[in-house]
Length: 347
Image 1 (cartoon, one colour):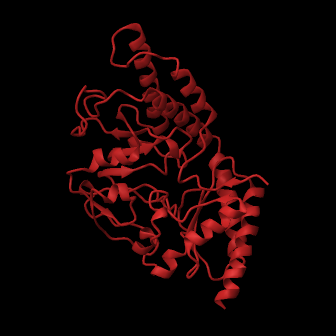
Image 2: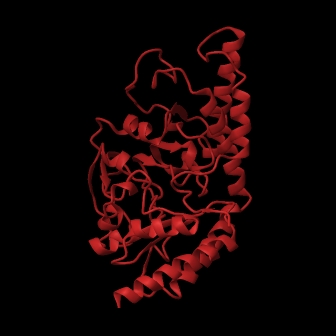
Image 3: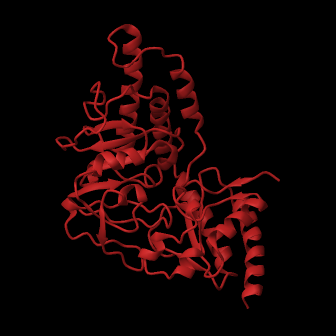
């Protein structure tokens, strides 16, 4: 039986639109900084993608700076600024911040001084969505973009950042989004590309795929694709909850990403569950893909007040627009089979 991919928050399959845009970019020979016809053709491809992103993000008039991904974007946005963050943030954000912001048991973060803080719009592990305060300095929009309806220009945020491969684009390209007049000191210096904010020849293939994927993702959102994903996620959650009495469904009842299910079973290691499901033909994760291989309890759940045994037993199932009800029900059968074995041993 074909494998089922349920790890879309780690990375997504490349969209057909992005693949086509990348193929077209392969035939563009010029450097975007060159003034001849070939260079102008390359520049036009970059600027088309910039316009596609601005439209999809609701960021018309904002500055969009292409970078290698959300990790570089976080560093560029946060380094040296001394902003506060919460321990539920991605490690790429926490590396540059003081994680002193309070988190409650529902995963909600209190931000007393928005101008001196950064706060994600949605959490990659739990799917919990935050209410961003007006005047927030920086926000990680990576998981929310393409899954939740929002406009950057309405968020009241100074800087946001996103990554292409989280919404059907290629890996290795991301973007910073800045309100006009926002100060940002370049860390990569040289040729002055990207409005002097990020030197280096632009990754035309990745940028072209990024723009096409963003446009397609926004179209899916407008067409209600993620409403259908939410319905399927709830079917899965209810099927598991009806049987798994030892399991905690993190964020259930809270505003979450429509595709994300985080469940924690104290005493049943998350990495064990991942391996068991992998052998059964299902790809899931034990948390953020950037840290799930480190065999440590989820820091996100720890920040929410869960003990080590519970945090160590967490897994994340994240769906995509192509995920079917039959696939999640097959996953439910496989997971519940292993759950019953665990519960029998623990009895």
